[in-house]
Image 1 (tube, rainbow, N blue to C red):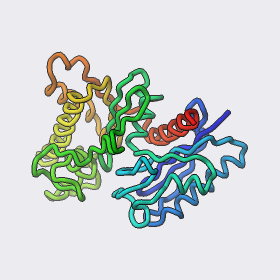
Image 2 (cartoon, rainbow, N blue to C red):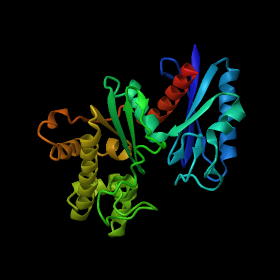
Image 3 (cartoon, rainbow, N blue to C red):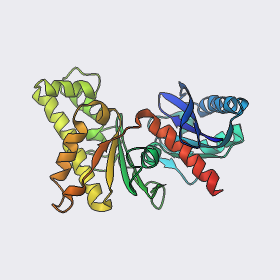
Image 4 (spheres, helix red, strand yellow):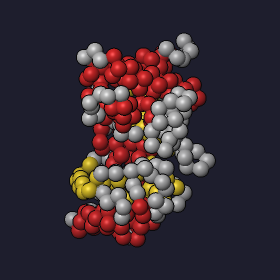
Length: 303
């Protein structure tokens, strides 16, 4: 039996999984990410991989999931918001390969989550799969025939900055009214706090909305409506067979995805309505790890 390692580098924690050829997670390890010093984090990662090998597991490749934007052609992190300091313009894939002696491949986290959904998740029976993660941020990935679509320069589906609301809410260094500034969990929470609501996360904003708070309801309505606008636009352009939503906002707020699907149907041609298919992810936090492992297996097979 051969194995691949899936890695998910996040702004808080990094996770490593040993995955077999049947896409089963055999072992998981998690440790804090040093968001200033990549070598410390990657050194810990390498030690975990060497531990797998010491247990007799033959690792054929390492797939690495990381938030974008990334230079996919060179396996390099660019100006990723959740990672600072020396991470920027750091050759992550090359460094991991040097530390482990194993071929390593870097890919956008949303792309790899999308890949996992298309291979073993809700999208496994479809050729054209669209994935959106609605969580701290908002990311996207598109899979066509089990292959990631990245565009001409590797920036395909870097959607956070896509403007849906002219001169709308500001979020970080994004363009005002970018979809992440309206529909992400961070945006929902920030907008609520800016108008005086005492909330810790988007779920609490939704709780207030359900309880009848009109301000909270308006914020949640915006998040759903503009996300639906965005999905309807994607459907008009790319015609996916299924749109899968992941992330804490979509998965933990009751009825969120169902409401978004109905709003999408209001915006498409009648002939398209029967094909609108918006579903929740069933892979949860494993999607990035499984997608990374599948990428490593695919690269090894193609070599």
